[in-house]
Length: 322
Image (cartoon, rainbow, N blue to C red; front, side):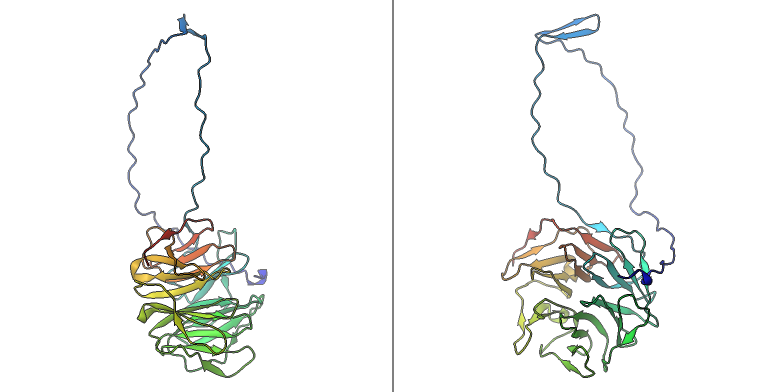
C-alpha cells in the first residue's frame, strides 16, 4: 500500500512473558577415560595412530517444515483480517476502533486512516488495492482508495450486524449480514443492492470469493460452508463434516478452500475439486475465528488470544477422516 497511509501505531507496553519456568542447572562431572585400543600407543601423553579412525558418513538431513509464527501486533479485540499480494497484513481491532497494517518484513504496525469506526469487523481489498471495512455498530461499509485518506461510505443500507466482506474481480462487494441471515451484493458503480439466493442461511459470519467470482459463505449456525457460482446457479454445501461453528472462510489461487472450525480449535483445508480434507498444523489454537490466505500460499489466522498467526507455505497438512 502507499506510504501516505503510514501513521505509526501508538506504542504499548510489552506484555509479560507467560509460562516461564526457572532454569535448572545440571552439575556435570568430567570423567577422563584413557582408552587404549589395538594399534594405538600412548607415549608420554602423545598418541600415535597406526590407522586413521574411520568416521561414519553423515546422512543428509531434511529441513523441518516451517511452523506458525506470531506476528507483532498488539491487539485488544482482533476481528477482521486481510492480506494483500505483497504480503502486507491488515487487522481490525473492534475495541480500539482501528485498522492496522503490518507491511511485509516490518515489525511495526501502522494505523490505516479510517475515521469514525465503531467495532470494525471484516476487511477486504479489491484489485486496485482499495481497502474495505465493515463498520459493524454503525451498520455501514467504508472504502478507502489506495494512498488516500478520504474514506467513502458505500450505499448499502438496512444491515443488521454485518461482519464478513469480500470483493470480486468486477468490483462487486458482498457483505455477510449476520443477524439477517443473508448475503448482500452491491455491483460496482451501482446504488442498488440485492440479496444472493443462498436460501436458509443461519448466522453467515464470513465469506470469500474466487477469481471466477464464485462466492463461499461460512454458514456458522448450520455448521457448513456454502458455495454459489456466478450467474444463475444453485447453492451447494461443500464436503466438510464435523464442523462446529465454522465462522471464517478463505480460498487460495488454486481454489483450495480453508475454514476455521472455531469450537474444534482447528483450521481445515479442502483440496480443489475433491473431497479430501486436511488439518493445517497450527498448534495450541484457541477458538480460531478469522482467516486469510496470501498469494504465496501463506495462511493467516486470528485466535481468541488476539494473536495473528502466520503459517508459511510449505507446511505439511494432516489428513482427517471426512
